Length: 216
Ligand code: IMP
Ligand code: MG
Image (cartoon, rainbow, N blue to C red; front, side, top):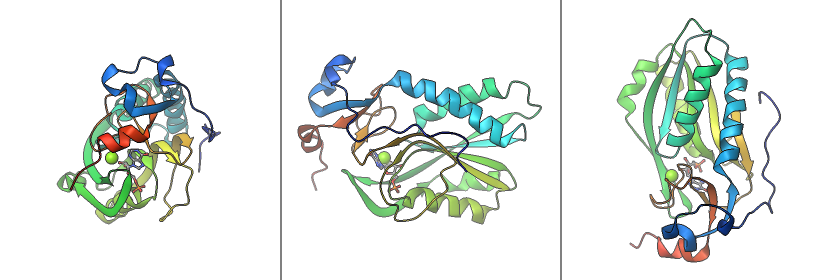
């Protein structure tokens, strides 16, 4: 139930990192900028309106899936605050942490940390805010746990949806961008815990991937 048209990043859409304000410490590790911060902000504003149109003024609990969605979450909450200006019911915010990646591969096992908070979501309308859907494993596991917890209704808001076949199909209700199958970092997204502070969503270079590989 996509609320409106999709924002699709084509396979070959890449801009030179030299054309943006990439910190010097990261410059050799990235090969291209794929979604500049300004574009994310514009898209998130519209997404908040789509969320508001679909969900309306009913009470809403926002669930931030850390760490990757921290920037997207604050941007979306800010825009929703404006969109819900006339609502009689306030929003609440909660945080949870999921971890599944090692290097650039999904490990297949998903850890959810901070589950004890989930009981507080029982009987509530929940908007799950996550960074990215790739195989679909992480999000589907979380949605299953929320269902088991007994939430009233659940929607998902995603910063990016990867154009790959899902291992597990999941509901993608509000998607900011659909992207090609490339490993991306920035705007909260990491490679072995690095690059989360990067303003723009970028593609890693081969040398960057090598440099920060987890050596076992
Ligand atoms: P899934 O379980 O395969 O759908 O993967 C979801 C999680 O994997 C996300 O929450 C991210 O933490 C991580 N992930 C997937 N693709 C990327 C990527 O391109 N860059 C950084 N992290 C990613
Ligand atoms: Mg991650």
